[in-house]
Length: 237
Image (tube, rainbow, N blue to C red):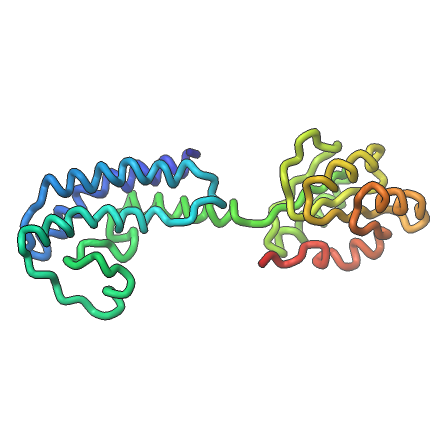
């Protein structure tokens, strides 16, 4: 779990008991301390399990788990024979099991610390969900130009001065054919990138032909590459 997720986990767990107790009091409902403790224990087990996963694999949101943890207090109130609250159709559709209106609609209701931690987590997840591209070049000017195009297209660009031993998986791999180890870069990226594009001087037909033979999906002259930078970063569905 990274620091942003750990902060969110701590903030949500700290907010749970005070929030539920205040909500019960505000609605004029009886305190169900044992149920609140059990709900907190459930959340303390479920929330780290979610947040320890990579952002791309987190299929639920932390707020959903917080809301689900209120099933225990809801059940305790029902067991006491407390009359459920009247709720509008939107609330019932969104949270059918929240018969007593205990669940927060947003993290803002959990207090400043929990809300800000949730915003930070959301920003971190959004950044992690961006498609990524890797560029192998030693040309700093080219790197800057390509980085701007990648960012505009919603990609996170990783620039490497040499062919990476373990580059990770990326949607797009870009190789500067003027790099002395361009052939090795193409070979390595072809195995882990959804698409590999090599670019070089228009007079070096041999280098472009060789790049295609090594696994590049496209090998194009610099003029064409930089003339249509955005096209090398396809929109991810």
